[in-house]
Image (cartoon, rainbow over all chains, first blue to last red; front, side, top):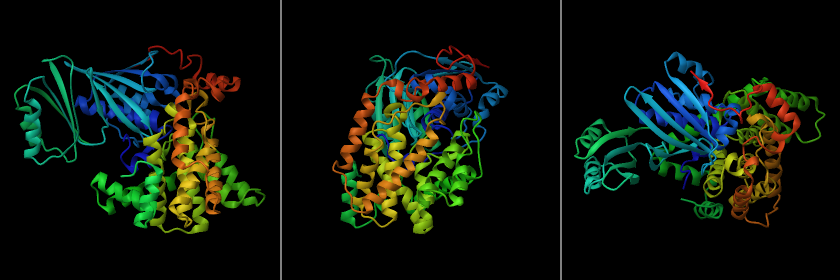
Length: 220
Length: 301
């Protein structure tokens, strides 16, 4: 089920004009910001399909940037986000792509700050509901609606059980989980959506596990 | 958890509760929130809808100048007593238009199920309110009933214009509103499903062809027609009229029609009304020579 809540249908409360092209776009931007963990210095935003064709009329451009600035869907500063980004030292580049993607409302966001880089692909599936489909070339499925833990790790045996045993110690229930890797034995990514808030202690303990290189926490 | 309209109706019948109650119970279970919290969240959304309608009825215009002011025209005409259609119908139309005019002006609205179709559900609710005199809780339940039907469409078909055309947006919104009106008026869960089916059948094939890619033309007026369609279908269902094609099959037909719709008619502003000479001229006037389609590597820094 792509939609799980009554508030996916009646909601979100948002700045017009489009739930998919404005509110959904802002949410994708905000997830990218959360995953990046800080305000980026530069963002390259590549728009595909319907996003590429109608972004101007729908305000998709300023909505994504509003998300990158950590604005919510109903933040009245949203239409001014491009100017605000400039003031805050965020350089934004838009690229209109011709390639045909699986979903018509697709955006790829590349973020940069000092040494850090992030590449994320998100789709806006309607009514403001989104899915993150790719992170640093790893395919994944993340709604951004639930608390989640992303574990970047080496592809080794036992790592999944090590991570889940930490979660079970803290009585955290897993709602959805997936593991992907680029190549056997190389970098891998674990995406764990959970039902409870994730305490700092949990993150600490997870980052101490061997073969874990990065933990990203996502909270609604 | 219900997966389709048939299961939803059956759950309501078996438990002898409203469809709204089935949705509320499911929400409590899925979200882990208390009943008060779930009701409170929807109450907030209802308040946003009331504020949007009020703002629209006071007169609002979009930045492009393409839309705005029609809700006021409709209210004035209604007050003149010359209206040919009934008061509730035209009142719903004006309030649906009011909401979408606010949306086009980048004001705050509540998506129901999307922003482009945000006028239909509140427009009809605030119009039938004057005849049915619901309590605040019943108005909140109206939104949960709408949500239940929208939930089925979103999971089994689509509520995205880019994926399924306007039938998926205003079509879904109208069906949701029709079902909720039936329940508020005291109709049975099955009658609510009939109203949804009757509405959606008459919205099948509706394309998404926004002029200049803006959520203005024809979106605002499609919400007006969506609201009238919903009220008419609700009355038909309450009168005892049924749909020969069951609601779930209508939803599936909508999905398949969306799948076979060319991309030019799914929110790309490449076909339909968006491709008319007047639309192209308006697009030129609003965005200038740098047409959105040809725009390459626009740098804003």
